[in-house]
Length: 291
Image (cartoon, rainbow, N blue to C red):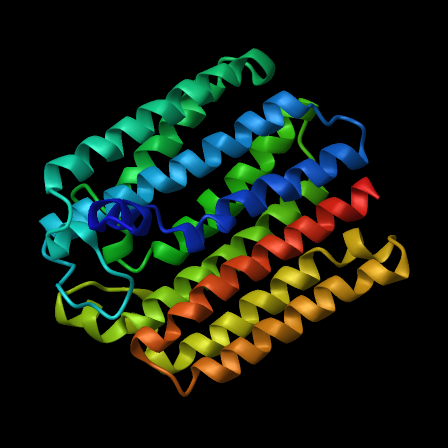
């Protein structure tokens, strides 16, 4: 593969995109369950969520490079701008180009959800940048996991459900918190891997603030709470589906146990695996409503 193309693919961070897909799938499962599912706005919500994540990923690469928070030869996936494969200007243009595309998709959703969604879209767009940019970047001030909890869990799940159902739901709210905790675990792996490098450049992540040794335990706690929050949703289903949360929790515990003895780039596959587990969990929940 051409080096430039490969650098753009790396910048998209394909292994993490299941995180944004999972939230939409979870919401759609509820819409199908209560008969409010609308295919077109659901598809647009999915496109909007993925575009916002890509824009945030691009912004993270650009602004971390500009602030000197990324170094060549880092333990994580290769950063095209830092390594010289992509120009900073190209990454900046891509960031705002994708964000503009996301804004257009978001505007179309006002047809179903109302004009107030414009304010919600602006809020989401600002925070897609604020994760890495601005006077107080969230990722630098120990707020990364909290940002993921809200912007990959609470907000997308509830908004996707609302755009189709035009109402709010307590079970959906609980499920959105569950999905948010699963998404936070993806970032926990990321920051656990990068703890030494982040500390060296003054990046205060949760791993550095609480201590790297506590992260596997937080990972397990998040997984456990995530499963508990959705127990009522699985309980009424056919017995075969009940195994899904049990298998998910067992897999997360195994990952947490395994990563306690690992560091550096060896942790990269576990980041992708955590995102895939989150995706499979939400997919199974969706299928449980369809079938």
